Image (cartoon, rainbow, N blue to C red; front, side, top):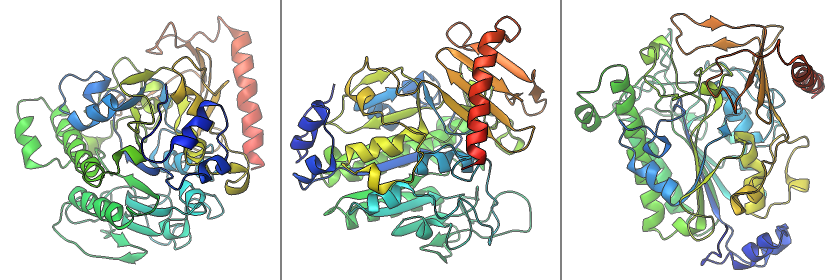
Amino acid sequence: MLRICRFGLTSFLLCLAAGDVSSAAVATEAAQPNVVIIYTDDQGSLDANCYGSTDLHTPHLDRLAQQGIRFTQMYAPSAICSASRAGLLTGRFPARAGVPGNVSSARGHAGMPSEQRTIAEMLGSAGYATGHVGKWHLGYTPETMPGGQGFDRSFGHMGGCIDNYSHFFYWNGPNRHDLWRDGKEVFRDGEFFLDMMVSEGQQFIEDHQGQPFFLYWAINAPHYPMQGTAKWREHYKDLDAPRRQYAEFVSTVDEAIGHLVDTLDRLQLRERTLIIVQSDHGHSTEERAFWGGGNAGPYRGAKGCLFEGGIRVPSIVSMPGTLAENEVRDQLATGCDWYPTIAQLCGVDLATSAQPSLDGKSLVPVLKQAGAPSPHDHFYWLLGGGKSAQWAVRKGPWKLLGNGRDLSDRRSPERVEKRFLVNLQEDIGETTNLAEKHPGIVAELEAIHQRHSRDLQGS
C-alpha cells in the first residue's frame, strides 16, 4: 500500500488514498515529485537477478526492486525500438502516435510527428525542468529531435545505435557520426558513451535539484554493439558466448544505473523522486547481437515479434516513503500507462495537458493496492504496416496473434499460422495454437483488432 511521504507530499498522498488526485490537491504542497525514467534497450524478459536470472550480477536493479514494486506482466508498447519509445512518451498506441515501426537513423528524416504531446511537454507545462540523455530514435529533424518534443536539454544520439567509443552509427555505411547536445553536433571521440550518460544525468539532476525535474535517461544498452567494460569482461570470462557478451553489457548497464541513483541519494532527493526502470522490448537475436544472449525464460519470441518474449519486459517503479517497497504486481500493465500514471502522481490535469485518445491508463490504483484489477480490459499491438503487419490482442488469459513471426532464432525465423490463439494461463510458452478449438474467442479478439485498425486509420 502507499505510505505517507516525509518530503512535502503528505497532502497529495492523503488525497490519493481518498481517491482524489486533482492538481489542486497537489498544489497545496510545493514539492512535486521528480521523475526519472530509465529506459533500457534490448534487455530480455528475465535479465536481472530480481527477475530470476542466476548468472547475472545486477545489484543496483535488484536494490531498486527491493525499494519499490516489480511488475511481472508489464508489456512494452511495441517489440521494436522507435515504436516502443513513441508509446512510452505519448501514452498512445505507437501507430496512433505515428510510429508503427522504426524511424530512419539518417539525418534529415522526420520521425514522430511534432504535434504528439510527450511526457516532457506534459510535465514542462506543469513547471518541470525536462532533460533527455541517451538514445532518441524518434526523428532526425529539428522539430522531431528532443528539443522539438518538449525537452529543455538533450544529450545523446538521434539514430538507433552507435559505437560507444567513436559515436558513429553502428549499422551499414556510409559511416555517420551521431552525437548531439541540444540540437548541435558535438565530438567526444574515445569517451565511453555510458560514462558520458552517467555524467550528463548527474549534471542535469544537480543543476535542477531546487525545482521539480523530469529526466528521460534512455540508456542505449544492452543493445548491440555489446561493449561491456573490462571489469565485467573479467567477471564473466568463464561464461559461454553469446551469454558472456550480453552479460558483460547488462552488468555495465546496472553499474551505470547505480551511479545515477547514488546521485539522488547523495543530494537527498531519492525519496522525492519517482524512478521507473523498464526495457523497451525483449532481447535481440540479430546477428549483430551474436544471435542472442538474452534470457526470455519460459516465453517464446524475442525483439521484433509479438510473442511474449518480444514484449513482456522487466519493469520496476520506486519511490521510497511513498510507494510500497519490495512488492510485486502481477496485473497486466503496459509502457503506455506511465504517461497517465506520472500525470496523476505529479498532480497534472490530463484534461488540459495531454492530447486526446490516450491508450494508456493510470496504474496508481495498482500501485496503491496489490489486489486492484488491471486497468485494461484488453490491450492491442500493431507492428509495421500493410497487410502483413504483425498484430496482437490480449484479453484476460487469451491472446490472439495475427501474421505472427517467431524470432527466437533469427537464423531460422518461424512464421506461424495467420491466426494464432493461446491461453497464457495454461500455455505461457505459446506452444499450441487453439484457434480451431475456440472460433468464438478468435472472432471476439479479431473484432477488437478490426475496431482498433479502423480507429487508427482515422487517427
